[in-house]
Image 1 (tube, one colour):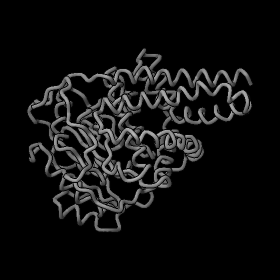
Image 2 (cartoon, helix red, strand yellow; image 1 turned 90 degrees about the vertical axis):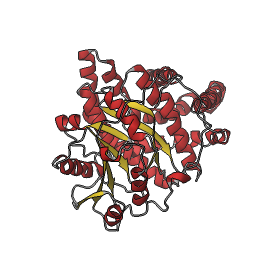
Image 3 (tube, one colour; image 1 turned 135 degrees about the vertical axis):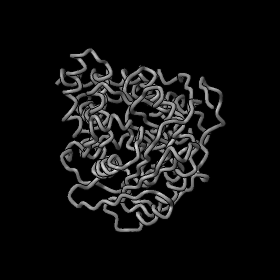
Image 4 (tube, helix red, strand yellow; image 1 turned 180 degrees about the vertical axis):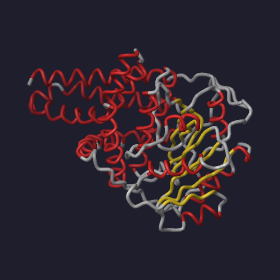
Length: 412
């Protein structure tokens, strides 16, 4: 029991320290040149299932992007829709691909179908950009992605922001989590030359890469599966910190629970199939990016071990000894508030956002049971759809950031 107890503690401490060290590299940003002339041609693709409430505003937003209109086309894949999603998309000027398949259900299958249809057409594209139907997009998104493609990057993930952050304590917690992840994890990995994580939306992928390796992603986390498959072929996911996409987040704990359970189902499924391969290939080729990618796949098991560690601590130490050893726990708990606050400061968020940190630890703890449930249901591919109840216009997005200060970058 002592070996198990201390072994778990050493693993958790080492894993946490590793990601703490990585986060330090998010304290700075490398110079970026976005003044390169527009030349990349994009196919913008949105997979939509019964999204009549939000799809029109996304398309209107996309038509207003600060990029030559002749260099991008908008496609909506209306997947098993029973509402007016396809009709509304056509009315707003998108090219609509309708798909009806009751056996192969999910975003991964819909994107596979859409890519095949688009590539079989007469238009040649340099890259596809994927958005969810409920997204809104910054006007310079394609201009920034064009600059990354011209640098030779082949997979680029945009900055994932929140369009309804102020709604509930759940959306506030999610906003805090994404903001910290964007700055102290995604940007950090990009600065270190490691692979970043695809977020399922706001991602730009080279057409040549898609044609060479195929999409073929049918898990519940098709983005994670694709980034892992790409890394096995030594292709990294890069990061565009100023290419923002705004996503609608679940309002209630129940909705968020179902969404994150699906993510954990997919994550543990992908980990079981690829973690060993990625680790062996990384060791064989001395490619640390692959080893780091394998460590990322451990995340659900890390959450599960945290839960196990709490139980073991209570049983092994007992209530009295637990109270005696709790001082370091309190120190760590309050230290994370300071460090998370520093991350928010680096992102220049407004002062009112800082108090949302109070909700974040409570929300973070709910990942532990979700990890266990996701692992138990890892072979279940049933897709859970998030319902949208309102439509937010791009010009009405809440401004949660202070005016931008000069950082080491160049723009047109």
